[in-house]
Amino acid sequence: MQSAFIYSAQFAEYKLSENHPYDPVRGRRAYELCNRYGLLAHPGMEVVTPEPASLEDFALVHSAPYLELLKRASGGEFILTMLEYGIGTEDCPVFPGLWEFLSISAGATIKAAELVMEKDYGFAFNPLGGFHHAGRSMAEGFCYVNDVCIIARKAADQGKKVMVIDIDAHHGNGTQDFFYDDPRVLTVSLHESGETLYPWGGNYDEIGEGPGRGFNVNVPLALNSDDEIFTFAFTEIFPPLVKAFAPDLVIGVMGVDTFSTDPLTHLKLTNNSYVQAVRVIHKLAPRWVALGAGGYNLDNVARGWCLLWAAAHDLDRQDDMTATLGGVFIGETDLGIASLRDMSVRTSGPEKLKVLEAAEAAIDYIKENVFPIIGAK
Image (cartoon, rainbow, N blue to C red; front, side):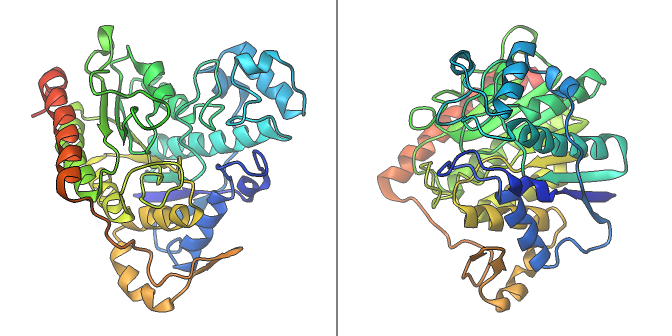
């Protein structure tokens, strides 16, 4: 089957604010680095230009009054009412072209899902997607429109079983809230604990309610959790659930803000465990869409997403050969690295035991309270 890298030069035309941590140029950086390594030219790969999402697409998961305010904000207008909806805050500022930015980024996610669900594509990647914090009528956490929910809702309404695997450092609270009572969508999130990071939730006992009980899974990772802890938790939870639930579509929210050098988070992962997770998802998902999500060190973003694309095509091992290229120039930034791979970072001693105990507590709770409902073993 084919695969698609969803990309538009329009991605880099917007800026939330001068010093905002989320810079849409990330999409261009990832695309250019993949090109530099020749990773977009293999048979079966295609670079696909997205079309803007429609108002009807947004209305699937967002309220009409909220969408109207987003459109007004895009024209540079600001009224105090917008703050009640999270619009105009430091995290989610008003800026010219806001609506156009939301339309092209969500449109890229919708295009990825359409190719995977309706065409002969097994995998599609939108680097400018994964806005998992946005609520029905609320902008928060750099997210205005929840593209994860849009494509999950579309697929579920078509009778498809959908699984969301979210490995961004921040808990996907918007996605959880939308599907908390919906058994058609199994949401699984591995993230930094809400005790130390926004959005201050995502506890392991939040497992859904009503008919959706058991279809919401959280694995909060303690401060300073490393690759070994993440891989242990991911391996214990994701494979059994995806095999038992047997989704038609898997949506991966593939943030790279879990890495030890990210300026906004407190985990100690590297892109080595990230690549392992990508490989497992690609092997076990029948068809899947990857969305870039967070990451606030742009070098991490470019290298992580380049490795994501490579690993999904079993090409990441050639990194040892391309390492001889030395520093890699991507647009405006010279990474100055000899390899895409990170050096290992490990937590040790009593601290390691502490983070392991936290992970084991979450895993034990999920196996006892969720696995029987899903039929996982």
